[in-house]
Amino acid sequence: MPSSYLPFSPWLLALMLAAFCAALEAWLSGPKPFRFLASLKQPRWALPIWGWMIVGGAFYVIMTYGAAAMLQAREQGLVALVMIIAVMVTDGVWNYLLFRYRRLDWAYCW
Image 1 (tube, rainbow, N blue to C red):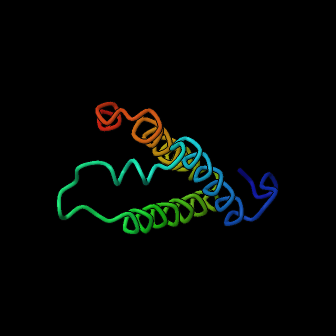
Image 2 (cartoon, one colour):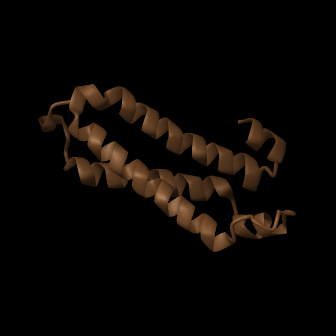
């Protein structure tokens, strides 16, 4: 992917990609996913809701950094970029199964 094919800087493109995947994940999660999460019986050591929000934020920071690095690597980073996108989309599907479809068994088999 020569830089002439990229309409934006790699960092801006990576940020837009991560924002799109985060919005997709939020939409796939359905209405009030944190209410459902709070209703589940969890061990004492389970993360509180705010902890999961930090984990989610860190996930997207890492994915954005990885996507930007692979975009800068051009052709050499194409396979890794596709895998990063696949991880973000898979995360959204997992949230669909867990929060919207309420199938914990399918979500953890996924």
